[in-house]
Structures are given as C-alpha cells and as structure tokens.
Length: 508
Image (cartoon, rainbow, N blue to C red):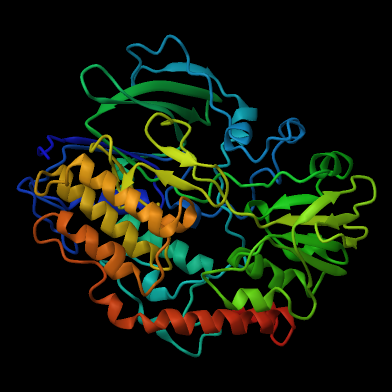
C-alpha cells in the first residue's frame, strides 16, 4: 500500500484511548522513529494534533462525576417508543446548522444551548465512589508510566487493584506531566466527521460555553482521524415488556448502572438486578447486604470471569433467567420459566453499553447494536479497511486494555508517519472474514484473554509501530500471573463484602 502523507490528526475522545494516541503522536519523529518512554519529539512528524472531548475534563471514565450522574434511564418519551435498545433513539443526533460554511473556532456560529439534547449525550462517567478496579495495578497503566511500589503492597485489602481515586490520580498526573491539555478541547462534542472533495476529513463540532450558555459550532479539516470515544458512554437497555409503563408509574425506581452512585437507594427494598457481568457482581456485593430481597436476572453464563457464574447463585441472591414481563402496577416480574417475583420496588440495569459512532455512520458499521455488538470493517480493531486515514483505539477488549490501547496508538503512528505500510485492502478484508468465521460476528470478535492478548493482538500490531518503538507488553507480560491472582482476589472480595465478613470501609 502507498505510504500516507499525514500531518494533521483529529482525535475523537480524550479518555484512555485518546490520551494514548496523543502521547504516541507527540513522540513520533519526522523520520518515522519513536521517542516513546522519553521526551517528546524535537522534530515531530505530525504538526497539528487536536483531541475533542465532550466532558469538561480529560480521562474518560476515569474522570469521574461522583456528585452528578447521567439520567437514570432514557426520558419517558424514548422509553415509550419501545425502541430504547436502539442507541440512535436514546442518543439522537443533533441537527447541524445550515450556515456553517466558513465558521471556525475563532469565528463560530453561536446558538442557545439545547439542554435536553445535552443530557442525551450520556457524557458523564459511570464510576461510583466505592469502585475499585478489576484489573491489577500493573496493567491499569501504559507501559511508559511507573508501576508505583505502594500499589504492590500485598497487605492492601484490595491488592492487586486500585481504588477509583488512585487510578484517576494516575491519569491526572500523566496528563499534567505530558502537558496534554495543550492539545485537548473540552466541552466539545463531535457531531459529524466526513471526507470533502479534496480528501480531507472535515470535523464538525459543537462547543459549549458555560459562561454564555451558548453552543459554538464550527468545522475544521484534518488529514487523519482517530476514533477513541470509548465503550462506556451510551447505556444498553434491553426492551422488556412493561418496563416503560413501570417507569412511568414508578419514577426513579429504575436506574442503569452508569448512574448508580450508592447502595442506599436499595436499602430495605425488593430489588431486581438485571445482568450477569462483572459490573453486576461489583454492585451486588454492596446491594445484597442492604436490600430487603435481591433478585438477579441474567441471560447467559459469563465467559471471562467464570467465578461470577457461581457468585450470582450464592446465598442472598435469588437467581433467575430472562424476564418475560413486568407488571407496571404491582411490580411483579414474570420470568420466561414461568416463575414470578412479586412486588419489585427497585430495578438496577447492569446491562452494559453500546459501541456508538453517530458522527461517522458511513465508515463504522456496528453489527446488531446491543451490549454484544461488533464493529465491522477494521483491521486488528485499529485501521479502517476502507480508508487507511481513519483509525480506532480502544475497541479491542481484554483485561490488558491499556496495553492493547497503546499498541493500537503506536501502530497508527507508525503507518501514518510513513515508517510502515499496511497490507492490501484484500488482505485486510480476508483477515477480518477469517476471524469472523473463527470467533463469531459479535462482541467476542474483539475479545482476547490475558493469555491470548500478546500473541494474538499486541505482537500482531508491532510490525506497524514507528521505527525503534518497543513492544509495550514485553516487560509486563512477565507478570501475567498477577491477573490470575487478581481474579481470585476479586472472587474473595465479592463474598466477603456480600456476606458482610468485612465492612465496605475495608476497601476504601
């Protein structure tokens, strides 16, 4: 494939993927070599880097909004459509002003902010005060960041994990040390990304001005675009008979896990928790001790954390399968096996999130939108097969997410700097087709276990890195057994907290 001539790059999102991308591009030299792990390039290959972030600060989910959460569930009007499992229904696109021609950041088109639309951006983090990570400290960092000794102390009750405040501080320190805010525009939502007749990417944005209450619209051109808007923004909610009507008659009875902040709202309540993932277990360990009754409804076994399958049928949890319907008057819940749980007063939806790219629908195809979707048309979850000037960071799923993110960002830097070239489109498409046959046309396509991720993903991207760029997982892979230690400690903490053998304060 022909080498690319890229000087300017737009980065959509300044969470873990966007920050890693910024770092990588800032450490890529004009000659295609890398300074990653050291000082920023003194002879940079890329002359213009802009990261657009819709929150008021960088860090993605690790920029918590502990005092203010997103909407508990979509607005009643959206629920009443009975299509609230469609991300375009609960996260509608915004109509772009017709007179944007010539508008720039310095001279934008200014309109009054639409606060209703702003709430449907789902922009706040779902991190809650009591959260601790489910991935060991060593692997919740980019390879060029220190693995602080204090977190390796095995006497820590949550060893080998980090409290949410500790991981947030890691990001804060990284952003400040690398002066990344010089390249980040916060309170800015990307509404459209499209190619113009000259082959440039035109990024159209809506920038909020809190001082004036205005939204400033403008467009800007770039040679390449990185999509790094994360996978924990738009909540996935399954359509359940009676759910919309139940919400109408019992406002505030339903909440998605993204807007959960404390177990106190479930105290002495008959509670239904829907879902069977790690977030389900994380929240049940706090809810079971305070709820009057705790029912869990889940569809399938968990393939990643196998201990969850036993945990969700343990003491204090009434285990159920899929829901048939909810009686909106009584709160009685009927399950597909015919059983009924009466008088449910609270429903917590731990049902995951959507991959969602409303600003770029012509280029990123999400297969069967749900919490089990696949993003089609990507080579190693990183390069658009159709257009090599479009890249994605953060789509691969693994307990080694920070290192997969780093690998994708490094591969983009290598190809876009001209140091490396991609295989032909045909070869890339054959790779995708073969992996669909092997793993399936769903979320599992993107998933790598901690024992697969080096050989199956990171090492496969290494040939596309800038010259001299080291493999981010060579050193940390030596400690891969820490992941297994972490899984066992997660299991132990779940039972200790759920069964009140230790107080919640022990983990804080």
